[in-house]
Length: 64
Image (cartoon, rainbow, N blue to C red; front, side):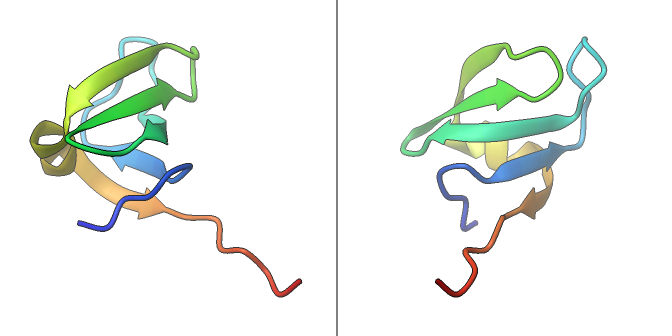
């Protein structure tokens, strides 16, 4: 799965704050994700994160 820095992930399950959107802050064997609802950050293994992703939303860079 192609997940890059600053992508927004729409997850299958919601965070306790009610948000299901997470911003990717670090990519590697683990992902550091930031909840877009409450701002909480967590480190999650790549395999677990990829299994729970419903959609990857990427802001494409425009022509500059």
